[in-house]
Length: 109
Picture 1 (cartoon, rainbow, N blue to C red):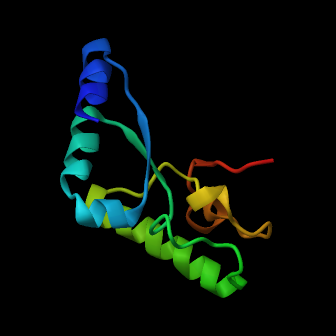
Picture 2 (cartoon, rainbow, N blue to C red):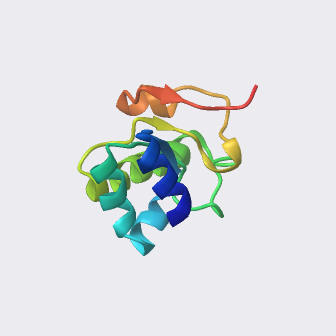
């Protein structure tokens, strides 16, 4: 990872990192790394082992809010967008974009 980051730094490339809240909790230096480089962050859920599929609408809303709030707490700002674990979320509204006015939502067709 450090070599990839070094290459991006050398080239002056700003990246977008798809990041789950659990990773930020376990590795708090990730937040500083992203903030220093002015990278955008997409919420990738709470952890890669917790999907939104099968949740009822209220549970899904709570998960989305928990993830956005967790990133906000670590990064000082909400994520730029949402890409749930395994790109799996129910096909109903409101979406994470609608819940907190995120800029983008990445999903499979």
